[in-house]
Length: 90
Image 1 (cartoon, rainbow, N blue to C red):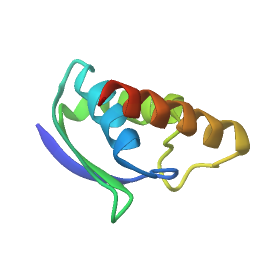
Image 2: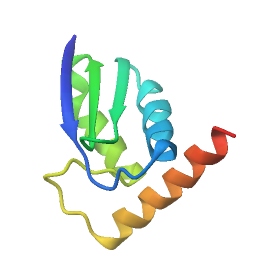
Image 3: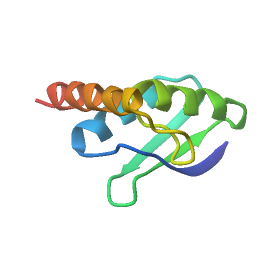
Image 4: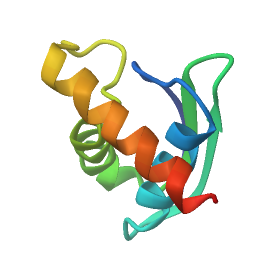
């Protein structure tokens, strides 16, 4: 297992954090996820060989690694993920 902190873009609120947490924990090989809104990061405990899968899922949700291009479409995806997270936490 490996623990890594990944800096991400578009992290805005608890709804974002809830979506990220739920979606990454659903990936086979991810054991623990901690989202930190203050540092715009996600700390993940995972099997080393699935890092690319984690990054791809974050991008699909609208939260790319901070080193990735963050275009308008990706930002819009993050708003959708944020709303879903808020609704799921009601």
